[in-house]
Image 1 (cartoon, rainbow, N blue to C red):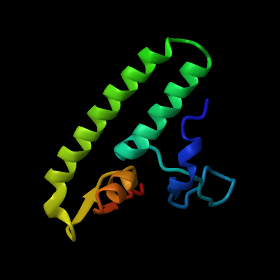
Image 2: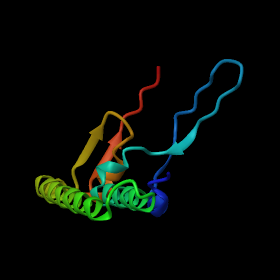
Image 3: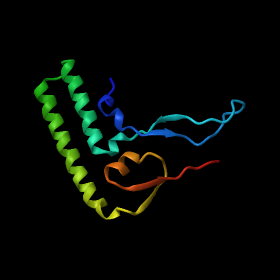
Image 4: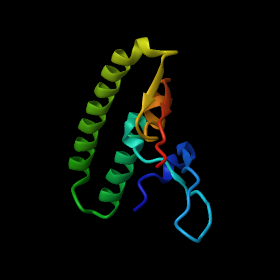
Length: 120
């Protein structure tokens, strides 16, 4: 099951540092940034997709799934509000991250995050 089908247009495409694995020559790998759950709106969209699949497959009573989804949505929205309040003063501040996984967090909260890339 693809829980991100409805949010694929919001993905970040990543490319690694150019490197080689021996005689294959230099190259880089493209992929998708993970950690979509750092954007609460994307986490909610994925939870909705999971709930819909559970109901469609009749794996649990729809009312129970809906109640759990409502509770999860409320928790994520509360966490989102709390996080937004704590990050409010960081507009325009450059933040350095140790890994390129924070694109979704940065976009959602309008932060300027630069990831360090370590090359051995």
